[in-house]
Length: 112
Image 1: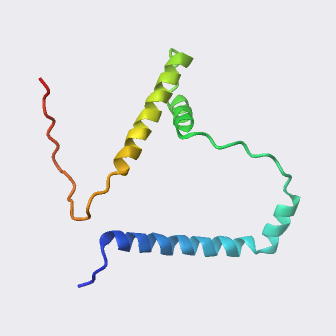
Image 2: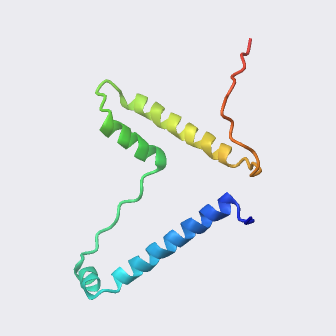
Image 3: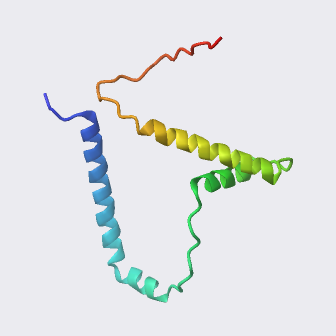
């Protein structure tokens, strides 16, 4: 039996896949057509990347247009997205041993 864990196996597979992608990208960039295209391409300043919350809010506005929502309500939604992301980051910081199995049933306790 192998001593390779599932996590190690997954990380090795991901590394191998990304290495193959890097090699194919490097080979594509070395072609003469790619270098000529880069020389003629005009330089345009790139827009700074959107913050996570701004991106999610833009997607929300595009997929679910709601003319009744005001800018204050959108800022509240954005704050909620930021809060949810912060909670998710805190949860990801909790280190669990590999032997811990996922909980298949969650029982909510009543606070009375």
